Length: 123
Image 1: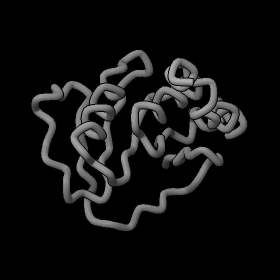
Image 2 (image 1 turned 60 degrees about the horizontal axis):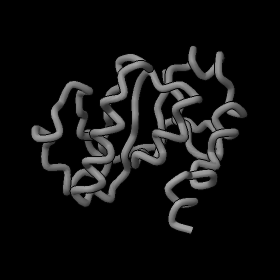
Image 3 (image 1 turned 135 degrees about the horizontal axis):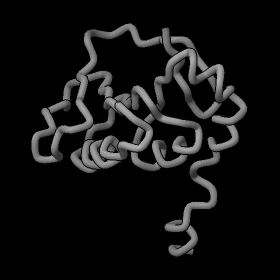
């Protein structure tokens, strides 16, 4: 089983569309598939130390993907702010990780739009 993390905390799986487009972390930005018609795109995170998925999310958003974008795998609460800023809408984690890092740890980082150094530079 797994838990979906959003800014307001933990949620059960609620995606009811067709098969999502799944992208491996080792996919190069130049090899990203056309996801323009996809309802859900899932980017794999095989290890919390593997940040390539953040780059892929940023690339997908830069190419105009406006659908639901999910990080799946070994993303920890400390990385939630970065995931949201990179363009992910949500993170899918295992039940084990959710037990070790409860919802309050994720919600603490849900103010991802605040304290953004780029916003401070623009002001």
